[in-house]
Length: 635
Ligand code: PRX
Image (cartoon, rainbow, N blue to C red; front, side, top):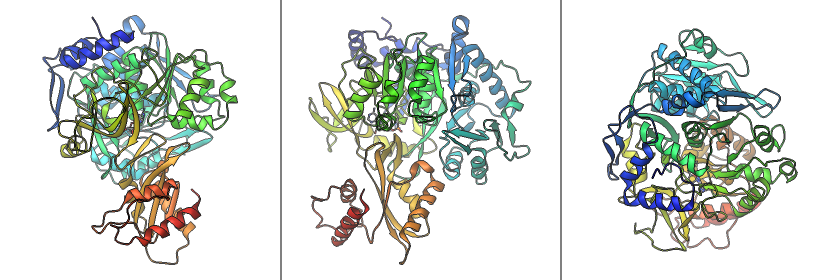
């Protein structure tokens, strides 16, 4: 039996059982559906203590041969990428697999000509335009490691990421369109590069044709560099465990870390999970609204779809431009069959009224998906009824940057579905719920810390340049388990994700460490100390609530708030703007100096009736002041 295509619930159950009883045989079976230069001689070697995880050792491959070349003979004229621009009056671009191949190979040759090769890191900081996909694949073609940085991050955040992995090149654009705005991009790169010494080449795609400064010898226009380059570039043969991706993500401590994915395992899992979760059939048009700056875009705009010869839609714009019907107009325009978005977008559109979605046809839709944060019941039912017209299954996909691919999710309409539940684990995924002593909690109707007890091919291998950090963050909380940072509930074997149990907050599906935001706030000259917590937000899922102690007295609070926001925008980017900034005289600290965040969370939630035991606080009276002031802020 070939388990690559799961087309019934019985087959899912068979696949799942086999994946647990004989993991190596199971993944051998799946991996044989890809093109390898040399087959692997050892399917899996692992220990979670190191951690040391190796999949498909001895195997060699290039992921772009699997995502592009192998489709050319029979499906070269199929559309690989449909690009839908920000402005609906601009023409959509369609690239066939043959055209994509030519573009990727040509740009791979550009990179090679500029001295970029296997193992070099390339930062990609650009809007959602076709050259972003081409750039990612061109890196993979020549064995360079791509590190895509979301184009909404600030120069400071970009510089940190470039420096951490010592990128040799940057791919960017002059500017970008977003709704009715045109924003600078290259200018931000220039600002970042003032503090980066490793970058030798900057390739700039022309998008909004604004004036930019080009540094002689370092900067080159994409369209000029491509002239005269061949559209044939032999794929670099990579070991299964060679690096493919670095993607920075926030945790509860320190600076964002570079999550590392490797070529073989990532390819196998991205391809396999895409095919089955979305029940993709050849000829379907699939659209994921995420940005390639996040893992969702890597695995489920680029790699997963292309590995399956799919047609993937890439959208440059925002859900509300030119109006709140844009998503549904694009679905109808390109006859999208699988649509994948985030709860925050669903909630925002839901709040704008049903007429937009009612006006659309949407009959092409077969499967609709959700990702990035827990989906509340109201949004789930609206999505199901209004967008899915009551007939499309919702795949609520739980996973993480670190997992590389979907971990817990329905498979199209094959699996049982329950509102607000991600559902059953994918084959090869062994979730457990642990109690605070690290004991597995058995049975149903239980809640605990969500951990995974066996490796899967696309799990992170390390955090770039700091293996100890990888161990401490994911493998030290509970011996022998990968710790996800999430809490979950299990009913009838199905999982419902409750949310983060660490100091990570999820704002509109974007992950922030509270410490990361606090560090940025503290760098403002007027601030002595701060504490940041998340609180429930109707649209964003969680909002950012910052408690701030000011340096000195007599400040104009509105002015201070503006200064803090400006500092955050500079240090991280506009996505980190707090929703509430409360100036406080002190923070609730224990005698040992630890901030009692539990209290701050309750106040932020507006639930101050029972703050629990505050007797261990150094100064319990500070809580009364915080409480009284919070009420005045009218969250
Ligand atoms: O808390 C979970 C939440 O997003 C976190 C992972 O964030 P990130 O690495 O940025 O990846 C987002 C896209 C995969 C998780 O720890 N999360 C993600 N998907 C879901 C979710 N929470 C509930 N339901 C989901 N479907």
